[in-house]
Length: 69
Image 1 (tube, helix red, strand yellow):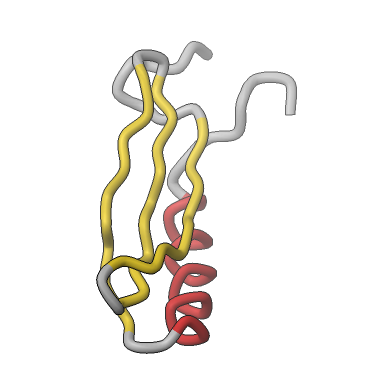
Image 2: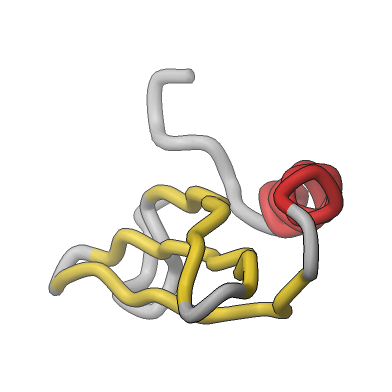
């Protein structure tokens, strides 16, 4: 089964400090490039990391693994 061009190949979830707030970002790798989406901001790094684990886990459920895995 081949992957359509609008389905991500890889998904990453990262915590980024920007202007005093900790942001959770989703990073999608597509055949034509990378796209990033900021999900939410948090006042503490710890809360952002906990949220990133949950958000990343939930987002990964909807992505099929690459062929051969």
